[in-house]
Image 1: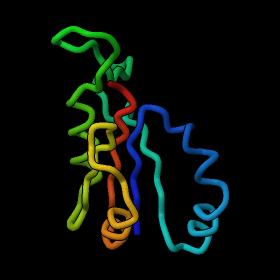
Image 2 (image 1 turned 90 degrees about the horizontal axis):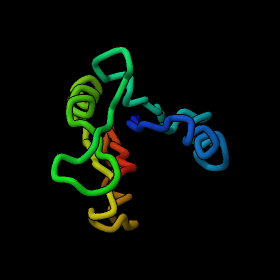
Image 3 (image 1 turned 90 degrees about the vertical axis):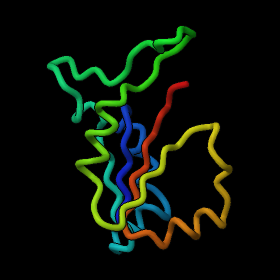
Length: 113
């Protein structure tokens, strides 16, 4: 199984991926996990991947262009793309079992409102 984690904060994954069960699974080749910096898919020299919401309100939102570019670059046959957000369905053991059967998983980390 291959998992690509697309995020604005790739170094946040250094510790969890190098410890415990994930480390062992990676060392044994049971799983391949790549952390992808969303800024690598931005246009312009400033590598900006977020912007203010058009409708107003606080916080920042991710720009769609880098997300689409990253997904298109990473997606292959049989790839499942999942946008992680608090409004989505609850991640349960059943959901984990279903996703474990996917050969290639792309996880999009929103991190913003």
